[in-house]
Image 1: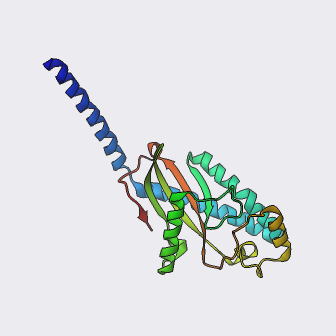
Image 2: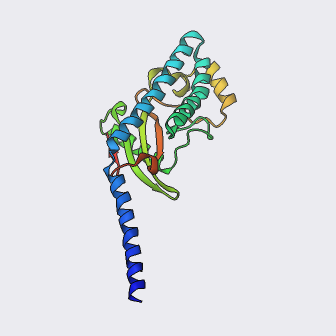
Length: 211
């Protein structure tokens, strides 16, 4: 009986050691390094999309630029997701297409925090947020970089008076449930959101960090 009990104790201790070793491995990784990599991906996404829109705006006009924005953004996000093994997406404070860009609960909270920080004088372009999040199917390293409304965005995201009639008609036809209008230059439009499984990220101490 003593031998059997001792084996059970040793087995339990071995399990505890294994858990501690895993926790130590996770805690030793550098969240800042992961955040830097995520920030580079988010910047790549925004730069590629911005360059394509500017090119289309110059060569073919605002209607074509909107089509590029709508179709190219998911393509770029998909390519970056495949290259990195992460989920890269774009979410909005108000969305044009209810099937795309709807933030989940965590993303809604971070967007609200971005808005609060902007109201206190923090520059939107300089903000980021990252943390390790526990979800029903595991833990994830999550990162968000805000998207600020620029003057060129007002052609399709501004007030009704700022959006040309041809674009208004196109938006009404293509997006009958469009809510992504009424923005002003400098406001928070949304964010690039990146999600990575903790098994891949091997990130460090739990908790969120803002920049």
